[in-house]
Image 1 (cartoon, rainbow, N blue to C red):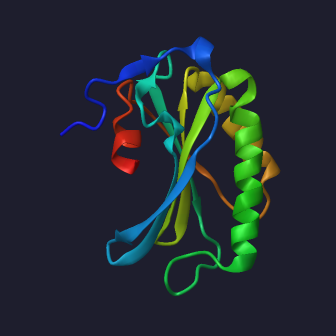
Image 2: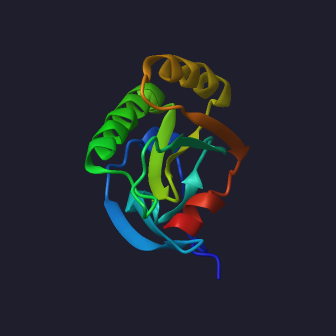
Length: 151
Protein backbone atom coordinates (compact mmCIF):
# COMPACT_ATOMS: atom_id res chain seq x y z
CA UNK A 1 0.00 0.00 0.00
CA UNK A 2 1.30 3.43 -0.94
CA UNK A 3 2.17 5.25 2.31
CA UNK A 4 1.06 8.68 1.06
CA UNK A 5 -2.48 7.76 -0.04
CA UNK A 6 -4.80 10.62 0.74
CA UNK A 7 -1.92 12.97 1.59
CA UNK A 8 -1.52 16.42 0.15
CA UNK A 9 1.45 17.90 -1.64
CA UNK A 10 3.21 20.51 0.48
CA UNK A 11 3.55 23.91 -1.18
CA UNK A 12 6.96 25.56 -1.39
CA UNK A 13 5.77 28.75 0.29
CA UNK A 14 5.06 26.71 3.45
CA UNK A 15 8.74 25.78 3.87
CA UNK A 16 10.57 25.15 6.08
CA UNK A 17 8.33 22.91 8.15
CA UNK A 18 10.88 21.89 10.76
CA UNK A 19 12.64 18.70 11.64
CA UNK A 20 11.61 15.42 13.25
CA UNK A 21 14.60 13.10 12.84
CA UNK A 22 14.07 9.38 13.44
CA UNK A 23 16.59 6.55 13.39
CA UNK A 24 15.83 3.07 12.07
CA UNK A 25 18.12 0.05 12.11
CA UNK A 26 18.14 -2.89 9.74
CA UNK A 27 20.40 -4.84 7.44
CA UNK A 28 21.45 -4.52 3.81
CA UNK A 29 23.15 -7.48 2.10
CA UNK A 30 23.85 -8.92 5.54
CA UNK A 31 25.48 -5.73 6.85
CA UNK A 32 24.08 -3.42 9.52
CA UNK A 33 22.23 -0.41 8.14
CA UNK A 34 21.15 2.79 9.84
CA UNK A 35 18.64 5.14 8.21
CA UNK A 36 18.02 8.57 9.72
CA UNK A 37 14.98 10.30 8.21
CA UNK A 38 13.25 13.62 8.70
CA UNK A 39 9.74 12.38 9.48
CA UNK A 40 8.36 15.95 9.33
CA UNK A 41 7.51 15.28 5.66
CA UNK A 42 5.76 11.98 6.41
CA UNK A 43 2.30 13.56 6.18
CA UNK A 44 2.86 14.88 2.65
CA UNK A 45 3.14 13.37 -0.79
CA UNK A 46 6.25 15.40 -1.57
CA UNK A 47 6.80 19.11 -1.93
CA UNK A 48 5.54 20.99 -4.97
CA UNK A 49 8.41 21.79 -7.32
CA UNK A 50 10.94 19.52 -5.60
CA UNK A 51 10.78 16.84 -8.26
CA UNK A 52 14.36 15.55 -8.22
CA UNK A 53 15.92 13.27 -5.65
CA UNK A 54 19.59 13.88 -4.94
CA UNK A 55 21.90 11.26 -3.47
CA UNK A 56 25.38 12.21 -2.36
CA UNK A 57 27.35 9.10 -1.46
CA UNK A 58 30.49 9.16 0.64
CA UNK A 59 32.51 5.94 0.57
CA UNK A 60 34.15 5.37 3.94
CA UNK A 61 37.94 5.63 4.05
CA UNK A 62 38.50 3.12 6.87
CA UNK A 63 35.25 1.33 7.78
CA UNK A 64 34.94 -0.98 10.75
CA UNK A 65 34.58 -4.71 9.92
CA UNK A 66 30.80 -4.14 10.18
CA UNK A 67 31.00 -1.66 7.28
CA UNK A 68 30.14 1.22 9.63
CA UNK A 69 32.33 4.27 10.28
CA UNK A 70 34.71 4.54 13.22
CA UNK A 71 34.09 7.25 15.81
CA UNK A 72 36.70 9.46 14.16
CA UNK A 73 35.33 8.96 10.65
CA UNK A 74 31.78 9.49 11.91
CA UNK A 75 32.84 12.96 13.11
CA UNK A 76 34.30 13.67 9.64
CA UNK A 77 31.04 12.54 8.02
CA UNK A 78 29.10 14.88 10.32
CA UNK A 79 31.25 17.77 9.12
CA UNK A 80 30.60 16.75 5.49
CA UNK A 81 26.86 16.62 6.25
CA UNK A 82 26.94 20.11 7.74
CA UNK A 83 28.85 21.38 4.71
CA UNK A 84 26.41 19.83 2.22
CA UNK A 85 23.35 21.06 4.11
CA UNK A 86 24.79 24.57 4.30
CA UNK A 87 25.37 24.63 0.55
CA UNK A 88 22.24 22.88 -0.71
CA UNK A 89 19.56 24.20 1.64
CA UNK A 90 20.22 27.89 0.94
CA UNK A 91 16.89 29.66 0.30
CA UNK A 92 15.10 26.28 0.53
CA UNK A 93 16.67 25.28 -2.78
CA UNK A 94 16.93 21.68 -1.56
CA UNK A 95 15.42 19.74 1.33
CA UNK A 96 17.51 17.30 3.38
CA UNK A 97 15.39 14.22 4.17
CA UNK A 98 17.64 11.28 5.07
CA UNK A 99 21.06 9.76 5.69
CA UNK A 100 21.77 6.08 5.05
CA UNK A 101 24.83 4.35 6.51
CA UNK A 102 25.70 0.80 5.45
CA UNK A 103 28.29 -1.36 3.72
CA UNK A 104 31.18 1.08 3.82
CA UNK A 105 29.34 4.24 2.77
CA UNK A 106 27.02 7.00 3.89
CA UNK A 107 24.51 8.58 1.52
CA UNK A 108 22.83 11.92 2.12
CA UNK A 109 19.39 12.21 0.50
CA UNK A 110 17.88 15.51 -0.60
CA UNK A 111 15.06 16.68 -2.83
CA UNK A 112 15.65 19.74 -4.99
CA UNK A 113 13.86 22.22 -7.20
CA UNK A 114 17.07 23.09 -9.07
CA UNK A 115 19.21 20.10 -10.19
CA UNK A 116 21.63 22.32 -12.14
CA UNK A 117 22.37 24.41 -9.06
CA UNK A 118 22.94 21.21 -7.07
CA UNK A 119 25.55 20.11 -9.62
CA UNK A 120 27.41 23.41 -9.25
CA UNK A 121 27.28 23.30 -5.45
CA UNK A 122 28.35 19.66 -5.45
CA UNK A 123 31.54 20.66 -7.30
CA UNK A 124 32.08 23.40 -4.73
CA UNK A 125 31.67 20.86 -1.91
CA UNK A 126 33.93 18.35 -3.64
CA UNK A 127 36.77 20.85 -3.78
CA UNK A 128 36.45 21.68 -0.08
CA UNK A 129 36.28 18.09 1.24
CA UNK A 130 39.79 16.81 1.69
CA UNK A 131 39.65 13.36 3.33
CA UNK A 132 36.76 11.79 1.42
CA UNK A 133 35.57 11.38 -2.13
CA UNK A 134 31.94 12.26 -2.76
CA UNK A 135 29.67 11.02 -5.54
CA UNK A 136 26.53 12.64 -6.93
CA UNK A 137 23.37 11.08 -8.33
CA UNK A 138 20.25 13.04 -9.35
CA UNK A 139 17.06 11.42 -10.60
CA UNK A 140 13.46 12.48 -11.19
CA UNK A 141 11.18 11.56 -8.28
CA UNK A 142 8.26 14.00 -8.12
CA UNK A 143 6.21 11.49 -6.12
CA UNK A 144 8.97 11.19 -3.47
CA UNK A 145 9.06 7.41 -3.87
CA UNK A 146 12.60 7.13 -2.46
CA UNK A 147 11.55 9.03 0.67
CA UNK A 148 8.46 6.84 1.00
CA UNK A 149 10.66 3.72 1.03
CA UNK A 150 13.02 5.21 3.60
CA UNK A 151 10.38 6.50 5.99
